[in-house]
Image (cartoon, rainbow, N blue to C red; front, side, top):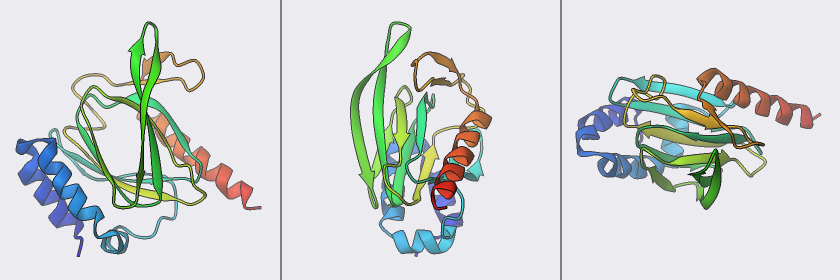
Length: 183
């Protein structure tokens, strides 16, 4: 059965082995979807909840609101994403002059895992009408990376400095839109 504290300790032990070792741990965790839900709780609100943070490792529980979209952004560190309920669609981007251009996509469902290298730019969409829950593991401090992160405007695709408070506000706004749609 999934245990959050054991998972974090296993990630700390594996971080020196790189994203492949972390990927194996995340794959094992999301294979126990019921255990993850029991340990982390049924999703009540969209948002990102830090489970562990250090200079070398960050573990975050993400809950994506229904039909939520998060702007293109980078991490400046590897990340491993595991979905334990719902669906997450990723669009991958590359720099193209002063903006970015889409170069691929990957859809993740319950039990799926994706590894993103440190230089990947991606946007995320929850395309379904229910909350999507994911565990994300980062090879560094997600909230204070040693190299500044960027985000890109959804409409203009112009780069700007990443702002965690802006990202958090997008989760709150997406949840509010969803709740309002329920009448």
